[in-house]
Image (spheres, rainbow, N blue to C red):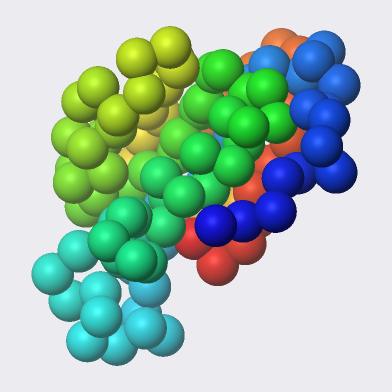
Length: 120
């Protein structure tokens, strides 16, 4: 599978939450995203967003704030299921696409958190 994050030790357990921006239409991905959000594209049978969240869980993250837009109900529906029983998932809606800064301001957690700003 994947090598462990940061060698064999978990990252500093002080960081417990992460924000994932999963809003956006994935227009550059063409036909791959006609019937699903880009975050739900499967890689080896698992949605990209779940692969990312699995890796973050390995690093000690237990609370996920996922920013989606109004057309990505599939992400919210999938994450509201029991994909990981001991993780807390909070869905935040970005109703009008105004970029990453707006998405982050909507998530607005009070503590420090890592951000996944990849092509998700």
